[in-house]
Length: 426
Image (spheres, rainbow, N blue to C red):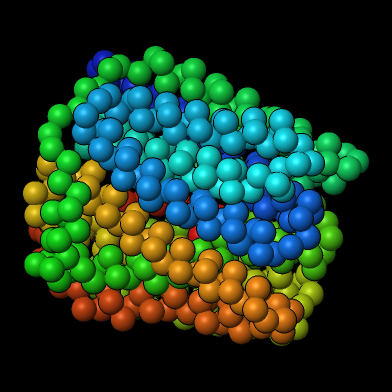
């Protein structure tokens, strides 16, 4: 068993650390339960892929806007208030879905805006509070334990949700899962009132950090790479889950797909974190990006559930190989940036802006393809086009030059939380 006192001691800030862990755990479980199935639920009401595209477009438009506003608020008032607002918006999303019932499809733009704002406020505040609450001696415990919670949620949540939805008639199962998510977020909101107040200070210099791209080549390269990361994630985030459901007509099959992906990714993250050294980072990014791209040929032109499961395994291996070194390089670039001590929030916001710019572009391609062509014939070729986004990341990161620190690798190691299938935003 984990000796918690050994890791966190008895300081006042440890109260906040455990609260943040609990909130992160509730968030992970709630998103794992519901996020896999929200798009399927809306698609079953609409039957039109273009509606799903517009719903997700509103998410990726409002998410960076929320990041920008949340960054400003974080510099002016208590950071805990920003976290509370994020969780409240996420709770409001599931409450709205439950209230609207079968009419949810008529309010897709509103739903997309609500959850996009929730994501933006939540993740900005969570990232900042993680920096402020954890200390060098508690950071490994925090990241490791949160990684365990997130991984277990990613494995158990979709499978459990798929089982419940498939066993209950009509849309009752969906409503049960959304109600549980609402309850979990409500508990998280209540927990946020027990945080120690964390007043903010300093100017919000977002434009200066954007302009820093002109002076800092590494910062320009890594933000450009994030555009291409978003190019794949924008469409793949929602379409693959719906695609699995369309092929199988089974929520249980979708839950199994998500479980298998998370299961493989969990163990691959552990291996990647231990074995990918600094010298291997760029080669690993290239290998992971190419593996992600070529995995598409498993499912685009010859479709079966067995091939989908093989695809889930393939991306469960590929994403950690790419994201572990890519995340490390990203944070190394930010960590060596100008005025990082005072502008940490701004760097996080700018990164999010460029990531979502790629997502917006991706979804716009998807919407135009569905609206103007025969989607059955053209979507596979669209996925081949935008699915190359992660492969292009290497072209940018290979040009990044960083001065290496003198610390041993084991002190540089970061623990990365597994992503859901194909870069799911939640």
